[in-house]
Length: 282
Ligand code: GLU
Image (cartoon, rainbow, N blue to C red; front, side, top):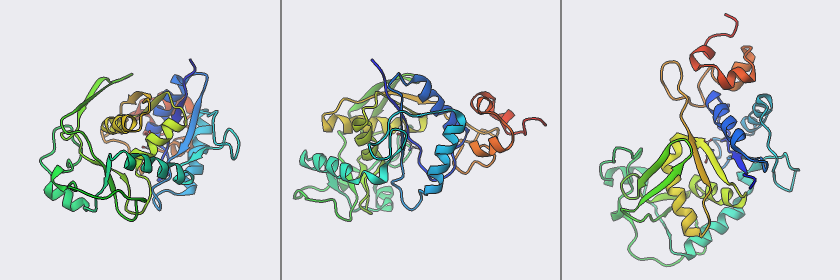
């Protein structure tokens, strides 16, 4: 059974060595159905076309290729989430029709003030159930307000990860009701990713381990939509020589900086990070 994977960079900066390594794992694990390249450019104005173009160029230089793309632009054109708003709205409608989501005007500050103490694995304050609406009419459109998915409090989501083994996250403890639609009327990350991984027939999602809790959220969305979820493989996060997690601004460890410094694609994928932090022929 050919397995299709995906590369899903967010063009808010240049890709770094951590992205390169995660994408190389995705490429190695994808079956003959190959990879989809999906530019996750929903977060305007933080996403910029020049970073999307740079990501494509960096992937070519690394020797990573993708086989599937949208009908418009040919098989090697990347999907762009910014062009897929109609599909995300359709998914919003299905969730609303199923009564799984609700408008939630509360600011981040309201949530932080009302949240219970975060659990050890909760990376952010858990949305307090007291802020859920008691009763409301169904809406025809999301409008200018954020929407949240109502999580089943106390339910533990368990999934097998190809690298991390068995992973468990409990709704209402590790994460709470999460945003699926944004105040600026754009789909939020969790909705867009699930909508696309389903529509693009992705068999296995390979991404960084910072998204493990998001996987539990996404499993709830797949279930609510009646879709079969993909398999998951979360790669260990790459840290710099000082032990800090790489961010898009990680100077010097961006793929294009390493290339300019004289490292080869194989070096970028395999050399220890501390080695890459020095010029290649010093
Ligand atoms: N676009 C996300 C990122 O660049 C990855 C999302 C995903 O793989 O699900 O961090």
